[in-house]
Length: 221
Image (cartoon, rainbow, N blue to C red; front, side, top):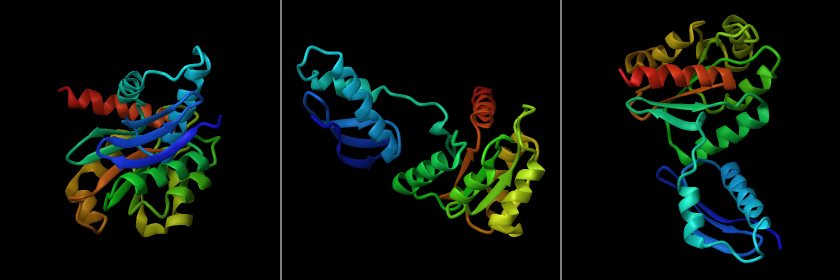
């Protein structure tokens, strides 16, 4: 039997799914993650669990309870509100495209300010291009590792795709996030009201990991 996503509806905090497994159908499954690719991952996970079972469908309530507890830190994770800061570790063009599609599918941020730090051995141009239609403005930064592409080099590549007016270079990651998340900066400097806006920190697993540590630590003060 084929398995997959029968239906998917974006919902507050995630999405509601109907999944076809190898052994049965499971409706009204709330998945607290965003994006069609996450729903597909859920279907694969469900089928994998069923494959190790006794041939009978799983208990639907257990399936719902299990998926309701799923977390994925650093993957379209809302780490802060007022203003909203979202973390996503997309580090290649395919991942960036999936993240961009999920943002369009589940949110209506306007403006969306990007904070991006990429690794030197990755396809920075491809990642930048994937996000270009979605970012009102981009702040190019870098993480603390020796493998990180410099903020200046990322900024130079970004200017070729976004234009000079839409790109700012801020090498220090903490400063870059603070600038993007300050309503006066994000609204006045970047040319739009920031009330319904958000910041997306992306470009690298390391960049997002460092940003997450900073923001969680700062939030506990």
